[in-house]
Image 1 (cartoon, helix red, strand yellow):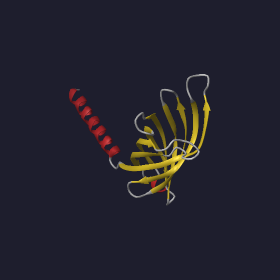
Image 2 (cartoon, one colour; image 1 turned 90 degrees about the horizontal axis):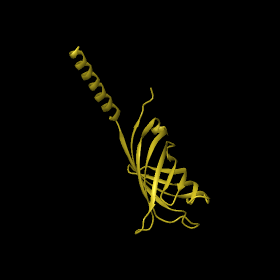
Image 3 (tube, rainbow, N blue to C red; image 1 turned 180 degrees about the vertical axis):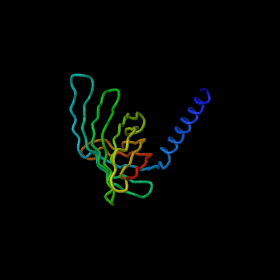
Image 4 (cartoon, rainbow, N blue to C red; image 1 turned 45 degrees about the vertical axis):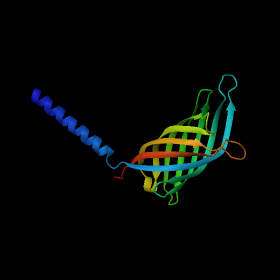
Length: 173
């Protein structure tokens, strides 16, 4: 009985190691910088509690990839703003010249710098869909960024985000 349990443990351990190795095999990295601005924004002040507003927005811009690709950037999301913190959640569509697309969702938190102009952003994302050469894409993302200009009629809240995505593309069977 003892030999049988040891063999089973060894077999299960080997299978787990093989599975983990296979699941990480083929993972690739996408590094890109997004330059964007608010194209639409609507804020609704809370008023009856000490929270400034709930905001829905759309952002547009370009994503410049380390490998030389350029994609148009369209993000739609919502911000929950309180005196303590600001958190935004939403979805992004990247569209490449060849028609391929990547869709990902994200959560970003930010804070105002007291010494340097602009907000600082940190967040995470999940690759959820792709078409063309990105059909079957899945993965996780880390996001950092900085606001460059404030949101007003002239500047529209220009910002950039640096993104690192670890991904795999499942093949069609």
